[in-house]
Length: 184
Image 1 (cartoon, one colour):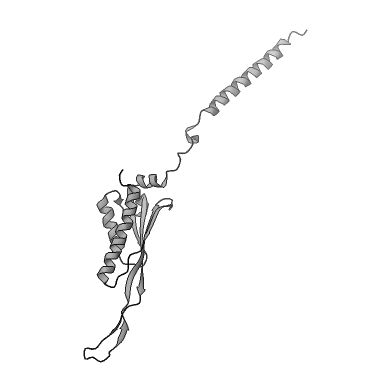
Image 2 (cartoon, one colour; image 1 turned 90 degrees about the vertical axis):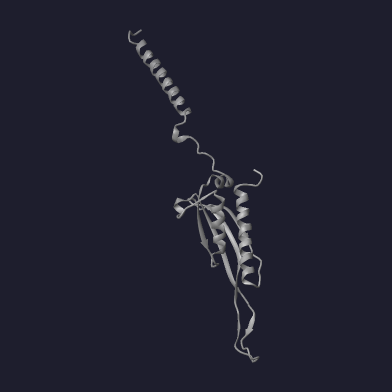
């Protein structure tokens, strides 16, 4: 037997022991998640995203007059649920009010007080055919809610305007009930 033979055996045993310890330490480090490796929180549901929103930007689109926009604006201000901001960059949500007017055929009128036929012409009536409210996340542009109302038609201008206001009020009430369900 050679006098140096136990030394290689000791070295081999030390190496095995060291690699075993290193493996155990490495395994322990893998089990402990690092802060940046923690799983991301699950995305919020649509109702939770609406409930979490505190600021809103109101945007008018379409070719309709300002009646629907004015109703939504005053209702949101009165509700106090959202602070209205002047830029979508500063808002949690964007509330887009779309109203579309279309010209309807009108009444044929003749002018002339002496009983003779005068100039004839059609009087055009503009009526709002639909009002749509779309609410979307200002950062991701993901739609969170959408509603549509069609105002009743009417011959008189004041009746048409009243019908548009009523349709817009129904629409904003539907949105209100989604954000703050009745009875809760």
